Amino acid sequence: MHELGIVFYIIRDVKAAAAENSVQRISAVVMNIGEVSTVVPEYLTDCWRWAADKEPLLKGSELKINMIPAVTQCQDCGQEYETVKYGKTCPHCGSGNTFLLKGNEVEIKEIEVPNN
Image (cartoon, rainbow, N blue to C red; front, side):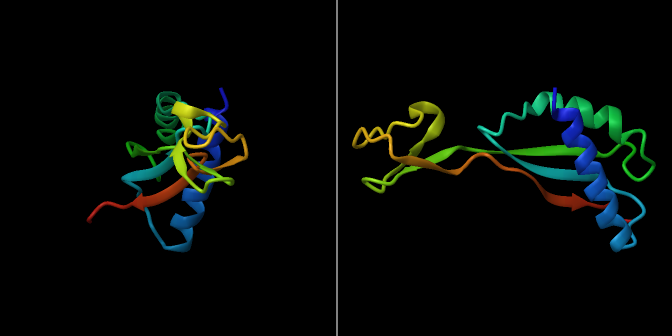
């Protein structure tokens, strides 16, 4: 389970951003997670709850996850298609000359602070 390691990196980055902006409390962290990133959202959320509650800055904060669909583009015909449904073979022309456009992200999108 690499999700715990990812959570430690998220916490490190959130704490750094909070320190740079004189933030004393975080209410939520919003993540963009790609459909083919190999991150299991449920595991990430479970790890977040365990680790975040050990940090005063993050205690009780929520981890919100936006799933980013995987999209592949064919270099031969230029068409884009759903990666998970069709894999590396273009459903439009049958070419295997394709590359992933999006869907592998694991990134912090937003850090929310309370309205105090």
